[in-house]
Length: 451
Figure 1 (cartoon, helix red, strand yellow):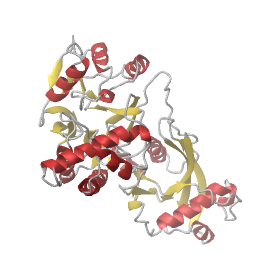
Figure 2 (figure 1 turned 180 degrees about the vertical axis):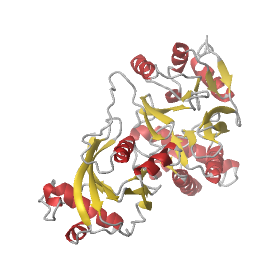
Figure 3 (figure 1 turned 30 degrees about the vertical axis):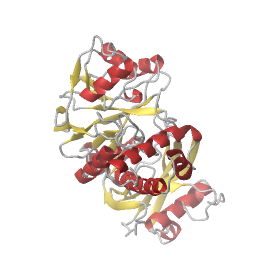
């Protein structure tokens, strides 16, 4: 597992801090509220930095910090120190990402105290906006459900809210006892993510289960699918203090419901799902799959729970799976999309449950709805519909390539060899399913020669 060292700066001035909102197109933490900074490069000098204040710390970290602030904010930290604009540089915190992520960032956070607020010039490629605000206001923005933020950042802000002059909070790395429990965390207020080990589509090894619902309303767990009895027991221990009303399944694929009946029985709750999902699960796993359980059919428009007092309603999102359902509050401040997209790679659209034409229409519909945050079943929550737009554009381009190759007389396997040279061979059957689905769509639309 890769560990990447990185640095971040918390500028402090007259009780305020400078925060940024990352661009929604970035691979890591898209659209999250954060502090300026970035990863340490191998080219960053290891020599002690000569500037006052900076010479007290590890040389490579300081050279990286100086470079990142110049790149992201057009701010010359050594010159600001020399001119007296910077009054102190202090170590603020260290954070190591948990082992459940593919790339673990080891973040070193430094506090930079200023006499006055400078006018930063933001790198628009990485930063959507920057703002001076108080730790209290940043935390309130998160609590109201209007920002994405990693837990360690909130811990830094809580400490600064309590003691604005504080330094050296030590190690704020999240602690997860994965031997006995399933990890759970909040990146969006009152939306708890539990990345549960599952029999998921490779190379992914986890499916996000979501714990949703206000304390005074129904609360549901979405798509629990532990890969084994051992993980099921971990999940039960993790949920032992939670009051659940139901399990909600977005669709019928195994990595979204495995061991869900056993979990529902142990918790004494019903399972909510679409009629299509129920029928496909029963067809695959037998008529007794839900034996002894209360099963409730949910449809588009049904209100399941409340979030921040808002009704959370069901949306039908066919394409990847004919019976797939999504969830969103009325304000559309988030949209839980299941497997409509994922944080990386391409979703498989395969018969009989997948339909490429429906997939295109569903993507177009949600892009038009324009929810603020997308919650995928695989990958991290992300701000805006950027990923949906990129996915739709990619599928349009891929479809046109398939149409041209088919018109040239290429078979599906020859199209596969031409278009999917960069994927592992074990993924070829899934890529072939996507090709076949595009060909079906093209024939239906009369766009395929000889179709």
